[in-house]
Image (tube, rainbow, N blue to C red; front, side):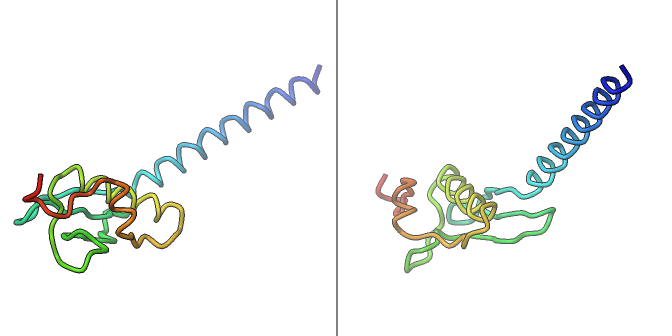
Length: 111
C-alpha cells in the first residue's frame, strides 16, 4: 500500500513539474513576437525579443530597391516568417522566391 501511495505522489509531483515547464516554455517563446507598424510610405515590421528590437524592417527585404510593404497583411506575413526562422534558429534572411510564395506585392500601384 505504501508503495502505491509513493508512486501516486511521485506521479503527481512529476505532473506538476511538467505543467510548470510547459508554462515557462510557452511564456518564454511568447516574449518574442512580430509587430507591424505604419510608415510614411506603407507598412513595416519589427521582431521584438523581451522588449528589445532585434529587427526593424521598414522596407520589403530581398529586393534591389527600397519600397515599404503595401499592406499591413503583407508586413505581418513576412514578419511571421522571419519569426519562425528565428525560432527554428536558422538564418532569418528571405529570398525573393519566399516573398513570392507568400504573395507579397512589390508595387503598391498595381493592385
